[in-house]
Length: 454
Ligand code: PHE
Image (cartoon, rainbow, N blue to C red; front, side, top):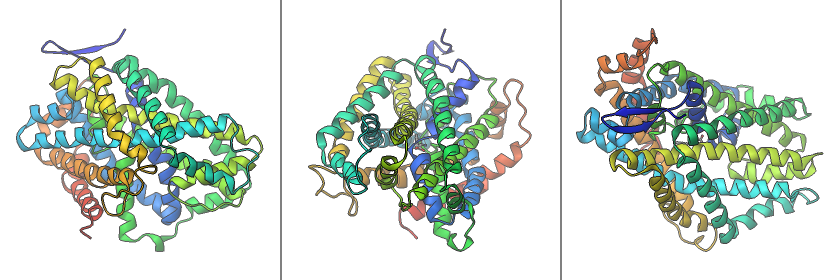
């Protein structure tokens, strides 16, 4: 039985359980950002000092904005555009438009990168890494990037899976998929992290990740930590707003925001504990970026005993992480068309999925036939849309949502929304102070920095 929320004759989905809501939101937060980006930027930027600072950002910026998004979503029971329109309207509706647009842009290239993980899952299941020498394995990645057909194929496969889940609805589609994939993701990751820490490279990896080097903490690194916290928690995108709009009234939103942020941070740290020990055990460089996951790790898998099994588990983990995040990106846009344009969910998911697939085509071709065409700066198409989304649209969305929550949402609305049912939120004044004075200033700094003002 799926639950619905009735609102003036409109039927909207609801999570069937609080556990389902938490798993789905954690699924959105935990994504490619946790598994490859967090580990390598931590290593580059001062290990333990960076981790401490990152955790501070989660408290000062992450949790306050996440709670703000959930409060707005549940209070209005709308998609981002409808939510702002029904609260204040006017200029604030632009915030809704911005985040729905970001959904289109981010999902288009996220699916392409997720497609690479599917390709690598298949490669590892076929044992493609074993028996190759260290020089051949990284070549597999260049070969994939050069093949337009392979990338388009996986882009289509991944997008079809996202659409197939989203069109089934909130509780039967999103919730069910997350309730299956997220526990499996935790299990695989825990296994890989324990194996990593116990392997010979465990000690140097712990040193690399956790020994604090305060000298590397420059102001720009601090901003990087803040930006990563926003991206990793899926904030500034309306994803938590939309997921919050399906939460039932008794759900303790502050507790949910804390639990989701806690899980997201643990997964990021565990990913580092899974990856770096084996990288060090086999004497490889802890190089960053996509190269770490698609070039360095496969070399390690080619030498490890039972490497085929480890490779398959690792890429399955990445596929789950990417898929559960992509679901929330499509859901934001689908919710908009269902609420505002009264489209039927099936039609919305199929049509929007197809349009976003088309938008992703140039990204899929950007390392192949389009590789000589540059857009923003020296970037190819895929890097340009990534730049546009994660450095401009997300921080701007996060800033507007923080300012709105702190300054335009009245205490009467916010407090009574949070305290619906049996919930008592004693830290309300702390949250309100943060979201009013601290969070927007910090996010504004990230935004100005990212667009190159300083
Ligand atoms: N949080 C996801 C990650 O870490 C990315 C994401 C951002 C997903 C915004 C949805 C919305 O990869």
